[in-house]
Length: 481
View 1 (tube, rainbow, N blue to C red):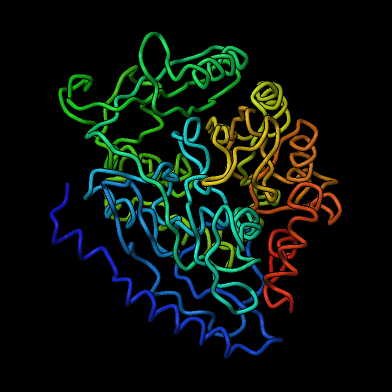
View 2 (view 1 turned 135 degrees about the vertical axis):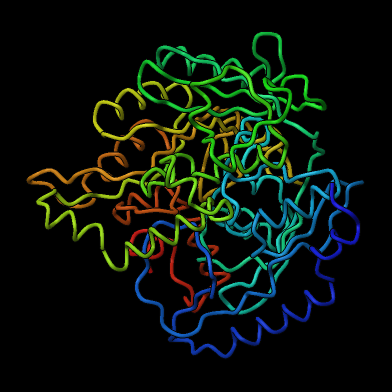
């Protein structure tokens, strides 16, 4: 744990936060009403390129720290642009963490709420927005409101998740925390077919146990239809489960996802467990040669992290260096297929079978998730099957599996860029699933409205952004504005 002095350095005072809030309100008011509004951010975890930015954008550099962490009430008030990397350091100093910590260090708390975040605790703790108690939001109308599960702005509180900044920006959020242990002990359990793996997921989600051991964290990797690993994690206080007598380190020469095939049991410190996927961007660092032994020895350890890889991808998107080399070599152009989709558990095996047959991408990430049984925080628990979050309407009581796939595929003769993504969208919808909107989307407007909020979103948009100063969710997700 970190000392008190170091902890204080990670916090910003409430008075300084109020000063920053006043400044950003003034900035917003100075933007011409016919000019686009955007955030001036150095990092992003979006994979949908936007139209060229115009103007300087809102300076939100003063909203990147925690305001207060209370280990007694297990709550924290945090500025909206705080990355989970910085948030975790502030909370670990007090022996706790957010209920769900998304996999990548530079995802911001506000981004995980106004977008979507997920991790291996999601089968018991749901999604990040479910542990939010209140949100201080700069709305499209230029006003700052405090939205809670009940009260005057309850409609905005429930419409904010998955709105991607189309209703406003989170300046601060008050969230729930949970206590941590020093280590997480892991079991990598192999399954030889898709159905037995999804059956096991259902059993674990219902009982929070497997083979007489508790399960506190659950995710998995599909290497092929006959090779599926579920990684079962549980809190640990000692090194008793460490295969080598010490906690494993996957921040240097060793690659975490390969270890699933190499050992049945493992143990990581809580900090290394939270960022186990960040070092190699799951497995995507292999595209940059970062998993080659010689390259890895030369690659600075401090640069083995997702935001570095994202910058490489952004550079390629702008300059098309690799694409031009492929063109000269006569290789077909490639379509980006970077998606996370939520599929009802009882249809997940069917989706995986279809995907592995139709789309040439492996491995796939599995992350089970279900909404918390108490529904919207602080409000009345909704009935079975209803959703308190209209812009991403997963059903309460329904277990889902997030399937993540992040790669490119060749564009076949007679096809165009986007065809593979469109086919995936159709299959996900047919199976009663949803997909996250951080990447490319191709829905027509009518289908999009049916899937992502409908009248609930329209009413919130009219109320909190009546002059349409912020792009609509459809414009942001599909038109990439």
